[in-house]
Length: 81
Image (cartoon, rainbow, N blue to C red; front, side, top):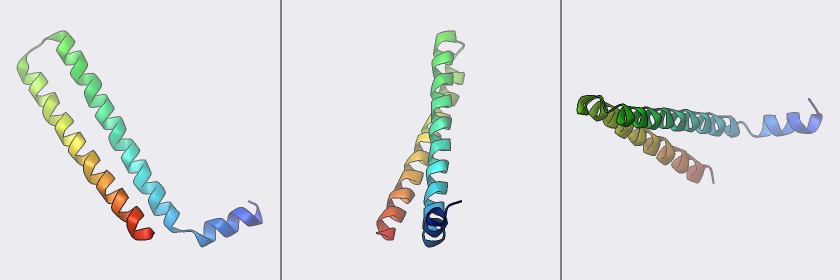
């Protein structure tokens, strides 16, 4: 590792928490996409309203967690500045 990169890494530890929040947000987005794809498959299958209802509830939960993560990321970004 170059001296310059090492100095940046040592001087900027809050970036690691910011990267963790971004990774958590990415995981939540992946979860929402997977649920959305599952919902499309359920609609195509037309296997009943119960499965579609369950999938919609899961999608709502994923969107809710996404909004919470986004709000925390924004608030931590604002508090860092």
